[in-house]
Image (tube, rainbow, N blue to C red; front, side, top):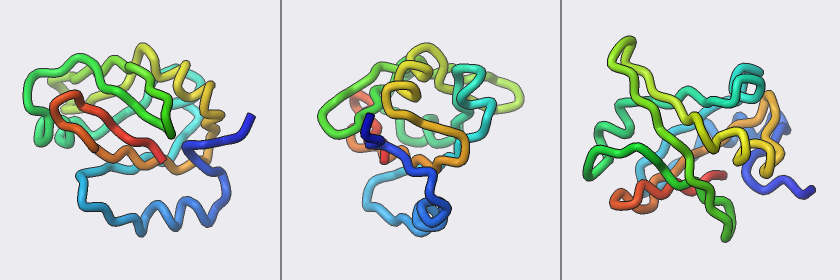
Length: 116
């Protein structure tokens, strides 16, 4: 399977740290817990800042494919995570430990995030 969304090459992590976009975005370096436990910790303040309304799901997009992923927001310790749907997304995009992923908000109405 060709890997579309993330790259394990160390240079990709460095490149991800230099990304600039006109759209709001956040970066995550994939750790073993993100792959093994089926969830991904995300910056809750990102969603509080950019969501137009209360949200329960986000849409992750790679090329022309989309996945609906549940967003859980915890009151304490002010964390959030992608849960249901994250495992399928990670598996279908061959996401592995060491990958660097960028989540770029391209539609705040539908919470569509382009992943690269």
